Length: 201
Image (cartoon, rainbow, N blue to C red; front, side, top):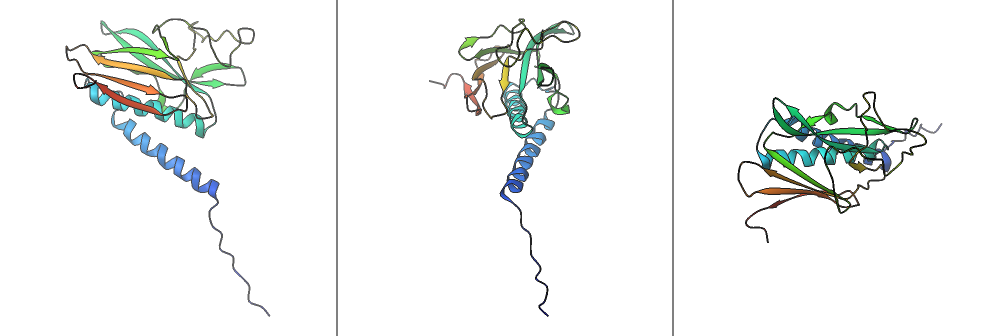
């Protein structure tokens, strides 16, 4: 009688890749949680944290195979005008953008002393303006508006394929310093930060 042969099962390549992606998301989550709410008025800290948040949203779009986006706006908070950002997810069943339910991709606020300029695909963005969707949504199928009547159309989209609308975000402080940062993305989804200033050629 032959002894039973015990087979040792290993991990498949897909399982290993899934684990690596989860570890990467966990690392991003740790960085994001350190600056949750972005209460710091430090331009350096906020810019790096916000870049990580954008990258996290892009990674989630690929991992969960959905289309994600971010909307920028201006709001009056405590008698100060502040920039805001809100992440949205495309609900393909109803062909409509809805607020992200991820607790780390909720609506957030820029510090009051930071100004923001955005170019998307080479065109300057008017922050807070009502826009029509360039991707996915047809006017015949959906009006693209939420319950309060405000359009939920993202200014920048992160595709499930890993691509991202190319953008350049310029952040600067109103405190009189010449320092400013640019957060930019290539169409392939790489999001980078570059500091501009007196030393920048």
